[in-house]
Amino acid sequence: MFQTDVLIVGAGPVGLTLACDLARRGVTCQIIERDATANRASKAKTIQPRSLEVLDDLGAVEHVVRHGVADLPLRFHDSSGGVVDRPSITVRARDSFRTPYPDPLWIGQFDVEHALRERLHQLGGSVEHRVEAVGLVQDEDGVTASLRAPDGDRAVRARYVVGTDGGKSTVRRLLGLPLEGETREWERWYIGDVTVDGLDRDHMHLWTSDDGMLVLTPLPHSDLWQLQAPVPAGVEPDSPTRELYQRLLDERNAGITLTSASWLSVYRVNIRMLTDYRSGRVLFAGDAAHVHTPAGGQGMNTGIQDAYNLGWKLGAVVGGASPDLLDTYSAERAPVARTVLALSTEKLDRTTPRIGGDPDTLGAALGELADDAVTTGLGIHYGRCSGDLAEGPVAGDRAPNATGLHGPGFTGALFDLTRGPQWTLIAFDNDDPALINRTIPTVLHVHRINTDHGIIDGDGEFQRIFAPRRGELILIRPDGYLAARVPEDRAADLFDCLPFPVPVR
Ligand SMILES: Cc1cc2nc3c(=O)[nH]c(=O)nc-3n(C[C@H](O)[C@H](O)[C@H](O)COP(=O)(O)OP(=O)(O)OC[C@H]3O[C@@H](n4cnc5c(N)ncnc54)[C@H](O)[C@@H]3O)c2cc1C
Image (tube, rainbow, N blue to C red; front, side, top):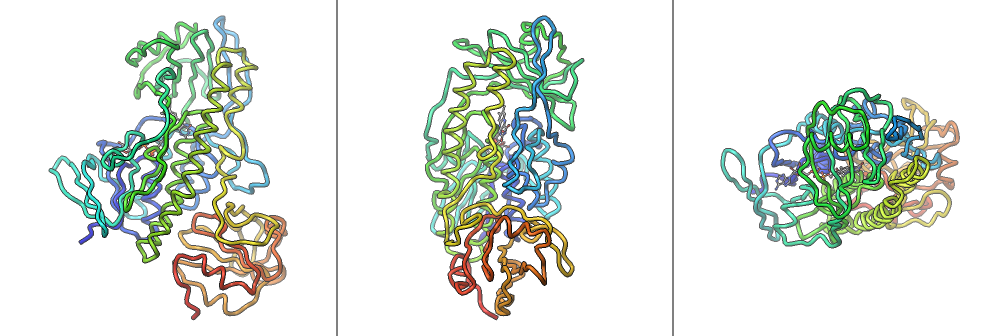
């Protein structure tokens, strides 16, 4: 009766992240994409530390790390040919986050999507191109989607549908759900992917003028540059063409020749979101759920992290857990988007008046776009399930990585123990033999970390980070968040946090 457990509409970075996560859980999923080919537009050009952790867990990080660039200093050009150099505007995550990926990486969105598509293939999935969702009807048991494809229209019956179909989401429109917020008609940017002659690729290049700055950012692992320039206030934008973009450079005396232009667009600032990311059996993630200003580079990153929060919950519910679990998705992720909307708007408003300034003013303004708690994604906190051990990270926090663990057959870090689709229970200096019986290979892994036997906290880093009490039990969700920390005599509370029964065998 169901052709698939989950139908994902839209194969941008968010849909692809979700497809990878579901595929590795053995959840059947179909991912459709209206466009005939993979996206070749750069759009997002930085990936943040938390998103890199997500890609690591999904097995898709290697390509991104190999091709991304951590340090991209600014080079300001004046109209007489002078240059002034300033440091990169990305912010390295503070050490206390304990991440293997402290540096945001500059990389075109198409490369991130490439890594995810390749991983999806490895997991046995693939995107169905030229297939567009045009209708949706949901009932108590499932959703019937009408799809339009070159070989004719067809219907697909799925248990759940996820709209990852971007800011103009058809799925959202079919359900009549409004994106609440504002559109800033007067704040528009020319944008495009271009090739140029005679510019070094080790810098982001900026030209300032009374009409605003023009930025050329090299996109690693390609010969492309992303061009951005504001449409002057009060002026209707012209059609974006290579000739127009060449004129914008010439007006700034850049002395640069555009040799080609591929993606050409006008970007309009929208600050909007859905109040609830769930409508029955239909869920939303990424731009379909929230759109905001580009300040701080958060769109793709927030969306990837939405999908990662949703993947394990959908997997659990398809596997028999209560559908109420899906309500926690919007409850956890909508407040994150609300913060991103507020902060990115505030940052844009603070930066815009300084855009015509000298390199120091502008460099400082751009440097304020990123911060290590919000933009890195590492400081995001979710509501707690339980947890009353005050020291170290608590339930609802991301579990930091602890390195220097070793034991029989294992040398590595906490992230090596948690990597994969399962829940992880860490028992610290706890030899209760019953615990190991709780292991369910694909769903819950139990590991003991000890001071003197088994997996040993060799460098003491696990203890420095978590400050665990002797015998403590630490439950980590599949998305790397702490679900609960309890003393050894309260194991039952901890198992109550799980969305499935854990029999003692
Ligand atoms: C100029 C610019 C700069 C940006 N910079 C950054 C940055 O530095 N950092 C950052 O994190 N974000 C940035 N973003 C935002 C980022 O590009 C988006 O947040 C991201 O693309 C959202 O991904 P998504 O998968 O939700 O949607 P999309 O990437 O829009 O993908 C949606 C997909 O759904 C498909 N689709 C639509 N309707 C249907 C349908 N009915 N049936 C089937 N398929 C359908 C579309 O063809 C598309 O491929 C930037 C965006 C722009 C434009």
